[in-house]
Amino acid sequence: MQQVEINVRGQIDRGWSNWFGGLKIRYTTDGGSTLTGTVRDQAELRGILTRLADLGLELISVTTNPDKRKGR
Image 1: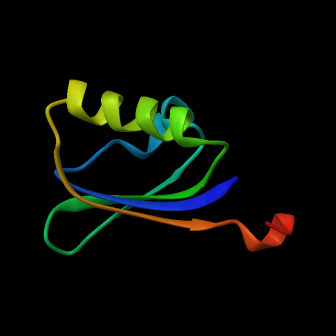
Image 2 (image 1 turned 180 degrees about the vertical axis):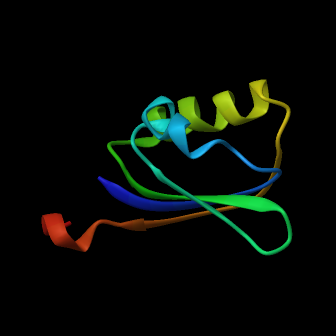
């Protein structure tokens, strides 16, 4: 498991959280969106990034960190 923070240009409807693996969606002051939460592995992260690309959203940044709550 790892914690992720994904920043994109454009706003994603917060109701789509489940479609993005349950990541929390919040809006930034510059009109973008930040998705935060936990992913199981790199394959799940890649799937989320693919969905964002399919929506035509511009990727700004992706930050990952091991999930310390799980002892990893």
